[in-house]
Length: 112
Length: 111
Image (cartoon, rainbow over all chains, first blue to last red; front, side, top):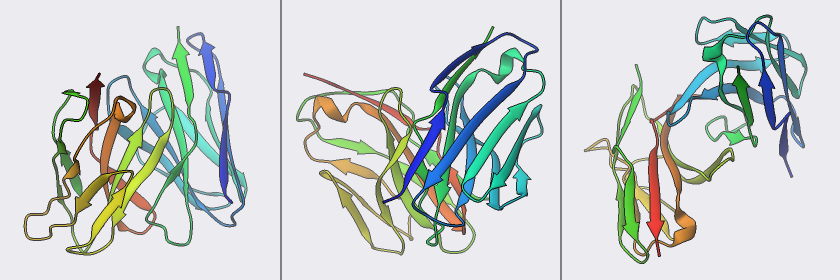
């Protein structure tokens, strides 16, 4: 069966510090991968999606970036965090059906 | 572009009450429709889906019917439980791989 992992689960970082969040998927090949952000009490904002290694599409201009160094690994990064980067970050994947998305447990990021 | 509009929350019900959460959509083409559920502190889980008009998705006592004529996919449950307290997201997918989500509706069920 397929599983998706995210780490860390929680993170508290000072403004201006770098960020690296990691997401990995097991049990499937060539998944579509997604990064979402969910602000407190808000809906989901799609940040990045990837259809293959090295192929990243950005949905919202911001100080975040994403990379996909391996087929089932998706990394969200920032060189300098802003207060507005605080939120709940969710990674998701979709398979050959491509319509259903499967979400990881999320990372709670607080920027102080 | 594609969009999903959900009934605004929060919704508070007593245990065993009937639940309806409205969802309407705008899409080009023929979307698949979904309800996802998010329990506190967790990621989203697929609750149910429907892929064509008049299909009914169902799971854990929840149901939703794909109504193309009214572009709706309302979520219903006949008797809610405290454990159903969560945030519910309606979503659609027309461009294989990318989904459009509603803003979510928070449901609280009181004993």
